[in-house]
Length: 638
Image 1 (cartoon, rainbow, N blue to C red):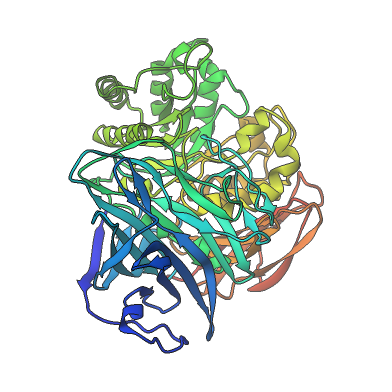
Image 2: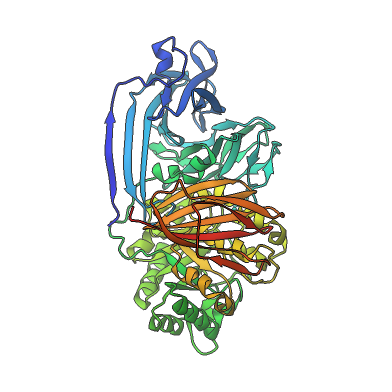
């Protein structure tokens, strides 16, 4: 059973002093700041351009580094504009709530950490405009970041026209940001220039080599739209733009949390802030939810889920490799060559493999040429009828593809799909989708989401050929921080277009990238041709983790990341450059005494491996250009 346990939530009237701060002159100023329990992060509320007590509210975020303080974000503009109220430019702070200390623990069935803990300080600031209309801003300051949201009480029918939240990011600061597309399938180039445009979450900003901020959002509930960042009006100001121009507001409305993960790169990569502020699990009995590896036909044979014999060959591969699942992808409703989809499902069950089925969401790619099955999930009646049939014939889960944007009706549709799937004990992969926003905690039957320029793009063009290595070493610091990522790693051969990352690199991706369902994309013949030790690794690799540690790295350059399952640590190293590189492997910081281990690394050529059965606690490993390694370590009981 999923356990959600709040250790201690209590109101305390206390003033937290931030270590190293100058003495605060007035109690009013003290009441306008919030400090994290560890005193590492501080948020200060200011009123800009104040006249007669009215002005524009802003947050300023500070981070502690040793005995000094640094500004993480100089100005976060706050406010809303509705069809009846301006709750942004001329606001007066009328009350400051007591501090609430939050200490929480909860379990995750998937993700970077199975047992999550967070501590934070919460305070609510209440503002009024000159018409006495009220806006509440709830701010939480955690030891690894800041989250804030808006609470609004409307006595009349109202519509949100825009959110005026904005982040000041000065030109010249290094950042990794992806241009907005509604499928979130793009790159995160390193840039210092504030180029005009619309930008997806997450956005990683570097203050210096020890201080980073990752901007995103979390806990989108029914009636709320997703959002993105927009700096087309002022280059240095990134404003939150909702995915819907006019959002109907209920009588009591809460926005999604705006989130800032703050600290070192290790703090960013290891953070669970996105799920920390998301709603607790709504599924009590979770025994039927099983993460695992998936045999996947599409990458090598795009249209072959309509071929019964080809589908059988991937079921055979899954059974041989010990993988739990075989995904029967698009066009299975046209299956022929010896059997139909129900025959394929029965065959999988006879081999001890659980089948998964693909669906078109019926929203993003419809009309002529759209792949099927189509229009089976759009209404509650059709969806539950289809889910009931799937459950009856033994399907374990669904991959639902081709969604259309971040408007509130689309977000509600995602929630409908997840909630109804849970009623029928079906797991879900949201593909061609929005980015994760904490739903993995609320709906633990959500196994993964795409929203990434992944390996399937080798089917479409040659862009990934030259960009894969740097892209792969950027994703653990950006996209994969906020939730599971259906990249489909581990392409040892070529699909329609060539790949030039090494075999060691491709193997390491399977640990470097986190996804509760990891789709294994290559051909059965390729997996069977790999060295026995590598096949053993592929058979035994977990897809969910008890802990995650960033050992070293820099976006786009290199990464060494460790993930633990039980008493085993799996350490992945990736070289994102076009030059050979020595990666430092320092295991001394990992909990548990090393008993034994082995490493699979680059051989003399990109398509070869070297396997070593001895590991030093500290060593340097030579990686080929675009290379990598995977180490497996057994420790004493933790």
